Length: 523
Image (cartoon, rainbow, N blue to C red; front, top):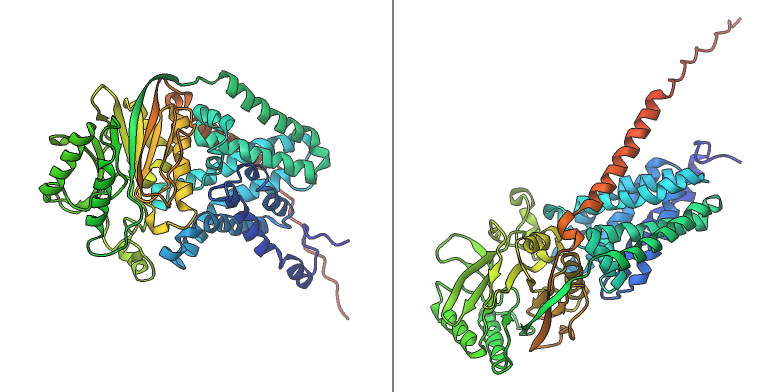
């Protein structure tokens, strides 16, 4: 039989045999999106990569594997971010095509290490290096300028206690490594019978690792409780006075908290639509609410500053006498939503979607705010809760409570609110600190210092104020102390593999030049 791998297959037959592979790669790459909210099929993450990896390991050439890795990566990006289509339209496909390139190295590793009939050594290497290659793709696209770490595979495990414990050791990155390793082992069990021993060993090793972490990893020690009220006004119709109506709704709901003795009241992102210096009447109304409830209010101002140029999104702590002086300006902005990268080149996207017409201004440094009684709050704004390093920095700076103020009303009826809210569980578990995720229109939720949910979540249909008994914790997790060591270990493994492969290619003798065929005389 003619060999495809050796290039002996007729070109026309080859085209027909590969015609189905491109759409299959896109579809297979999209499958892991089902593990995230809203479907939230967390268990599916452990098998979701298998169809894509089976396709890649059977690719006839490395070039074909690279193409199918790119297409599958683009399919994954579109599936996880499909709710952006009304805002970005066709530009989402272009972004997905760009980000999909980051899966090419992973696809080549899958074909090289899991393809054919891998011996035990190659299969064992695949169980380590293929997850490391996946993590490389996650790390590359996690740069804020490319959209940030949204849809990391490990984040699909936000409601699984053993996975949250694993996150406290190595962050969401370690959870991603575990999930991909299990998928690798299943691929070997299904397609490479000769590699069953390392495959079974890999699955067993993942289970043992998770169990060991469950028993050994430090658990946060509860050191008290804080009564935190979350105010969720609910949807407000767009219009010239929408900011005023949103403020009035938050004001009305906050008054219902009088007598419930909250220690802190949290409003969502963009809950105040005017600079408080320019609108002292709003500042007085907020101060009156603080006096009435007996608690400071953490609000979020989205407005052009009266004393500084540009528009900022700022977390501002208000007391009975007005602003306390604690203010945090959002540092990491949403690409296209809050600024347009390289606006001189890409400014045209504002004409085909809802991209920002004017770039927001960036804050300069994280801020930890002091509450009465010694509790310290670390605020984040909107999609900053997707960045593990930001909450870790706040924890190391002394925050005992993490707060994310968010607004996903643009994507109200999509998967976005649930996906965003789920990130609070990961950040809480990583840092051993409770986290409040407060939104304008839901989903608002509170998670304890082990990532466990505290009380009911406020769905997107709710317009209410709710008080949560939030457990505070002391101590430090391994992730807070050692940071992204799992990423460093994965990169080190990939570098070592590349070095070994490079050394082997240098030692391999060069092929001797073939002599040209002798010419024969023609008579």
